[in-house]
Image 1 (cartoon, helix red, strand yellow):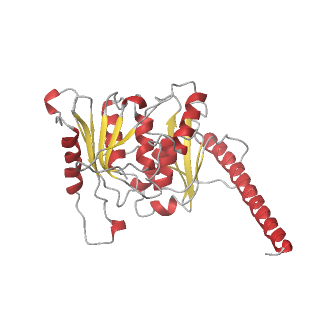
Image 2 (cartoon, rainbow, N blue to C red):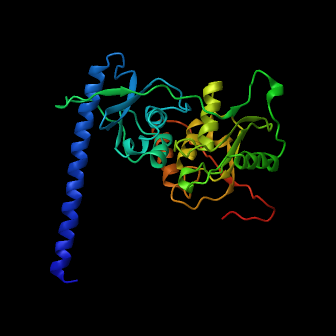
Image 3 (cartoon, rainbow, N blue to C red):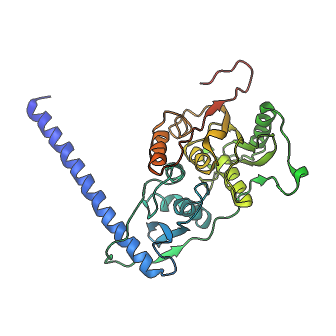
Length: 324
């Protein structure tokens, strides 16, 4: 390549980057105006007490809200509620709607980022209300999330707990859940992926169990279902000493949910049978040196919270198997 051609190429790259930055700046200004419009149109949700997440489409702007005063380990956020609410309310249009950028006034957690990566497209957090947009929009509030179809143990009836006394039994139980998933004759992307997961406490009692049902709702992975079902029923974090056994390594969405909802990230273990080599599963926040973990640790230090160490281990399906 000649020197002139190289200079022209560099100039084109610089101009392209400048246009991208200009577009991002315009999007942020518009989002700030939208946020300001939202709080004016909904005085029951004050900016000091409520966060909002929204996504715009041809029908207006879908939105969900969450109180700012909530526990760190809660399995919902404004972004999570928005994405799951869109899938539940408009299952046939959800993927089209969620191709648009999501905006939220809340800071982004790894739980939010993971769900966006798997079930939506892009997100901008920490939007500050400012100004007023010139084109009013119709706001459409999404209903509260439905109760997950995962099975949850009843803490008030000790005998209701299923006891899995060994890791091999727990993994075998997860495999059984996966084997019971019904598959049709259509293409793979329209089928529920055969993944089962079980959450047990330190004594081997099954706290929750679930199987994938993500063919029409991309958020309903087995691990997300069991974590949300457990927390929504019992109102507490994944307890210390708990273990999750799953037939496939958790993806970024599931890993972010587990990390966010653990009472103490140093006191929970995640075991998986099959390694997921895909871009959404190969490296997650459960991996000690991952970008997600480092980012979470920076946020943790900034918030003066103890650093967590969530160790991910591999449970071989058969003796002698090695971690890929």
